Image (tube, rainbow, N blue to C red):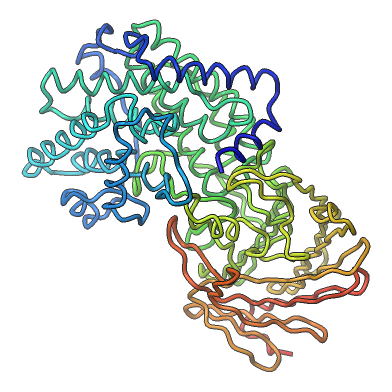
Length: 598
């Protein structure tokens, strides 16, 4: 698996990137042998309590339920639905190994779940809980609990050993937590403050040596820069601290135009990571401006375009479709959000985002439909994109109806990873059982497709759009898939799938249903109901859908509501074998329950 990963990376590496990778390899040899320990020791850098107290932390909105606080105080942590015993066992097994020597396999626990508790965001949740109203009678006990937790974590994870130094991004997420602890805990001894400060220095030093650059640029880079900015502000008197702050701001400004497209959409083609990236920016902008470290007036307009993009996709309950990868990550902690500048979202019945590649239709009867005519993801590796060209999602009255399947897990379940990011799990057409692009590894695609938005125009009673992707032009007998979407009578949709090219192929049209949906046939229509919200769906012509739910071999009809969780869910599927010129699909979706089924 690792060899395949590195070979795939090498195929896309430029000469400067190869040189950078070699320097990182040499750096790891240097660090493994224990050379230059004075370089990552913060002991020689004098930082007074008054200097740290003068730093103003970012504002936030706190929505952590009391039950969660009680669970955290009882010793629970955020663990992405992984058993805490499994996490502790893996930490015990690998805790004394140099981080770069820790080997992972399909038999290993999901490393993303291992890392989640070590983000220490449960500590941030408790620290900020004390600032919500009158907590005086609980403050001493909670402070002691927090202090014990952070000191124990640092001592149990000595730098640079164990799994929690494997990712510079994970180090970046911990840096603000360290600063929150030093600032907000009033029961730390001088020795304990120095221990946390030294951990912050070591984290920032490691990040500065292992930045995600070149083909690794992405949300990891953003988080690493946030770590550099926060640590740079703390150690500003030192040359290293000023360099960290400068490099962090420089890369954040550079990545702003890379990560967020002109229309506000995500280059990574992931709704969850777009939210995550925007929140990391808002957190850092607030910190920089409150401490007069950088004037962010050139950053905020782009962030507000990103907020407008997300607002267009939100249904009446605030839900977002789970397009692309999602690892349920938070900038601060679950239930704690950075303060975002409000942007006025112009409510349109049809919003087209040509750069990101989406059309969003909002009907008068509270239906939200998305149509994906965007690229696979962020080149050159397309890490967090799914092969979902021309897929649709649909919600009604805040109830999810036709859904993107989600992510499930990144590691340890290769067949699950392949399924959830593959074409067959999305609301589009799969040809010859193949994905629209080639999955090289769990995070790397090759043979990416291109999508052409051929038509997008208003009609008297609605809207019409059409797009074509070339993902199957790589076949020996190539095929191009065209999907047209007609929105009419303010509530209904006609989706037509046609094909051009050569040869005889298998065509499979799928519509993934939310697990809460009950589905039954009525007068030739599929009636889909979720908590009182109802839509009708029908395949025109001589073919009809079959209903699948939780098929295990091969996987079909599964949904992931959260990272590490999968549920059996209904799926409407129709498979046709024929010549490219003889196959087409026409799906009618009626969303107004007053319409009499035809």
